[in-house]
Image (cartoon, rainbow, N blue to C red):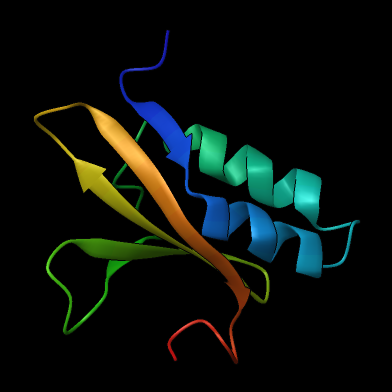
Length: 86
């Protein structure tokens, strides 16, 4: 059983549709693993934000937020690295 619930915002679903369909399963799997460990070694806190973190999946960045009190991980954006931080 996952210790955190993984939620996807509508913006993240829109971002997934814009990506290469071959990459989507790998990205979804990496986001699902955030339910077990929302702070993996490969994730970094984004500077200039309150609680956003990023996870690298190849050239794609998964931008997410962890709410420890509610035990949820909310995926906010899934974008190519050149567009992820704009």
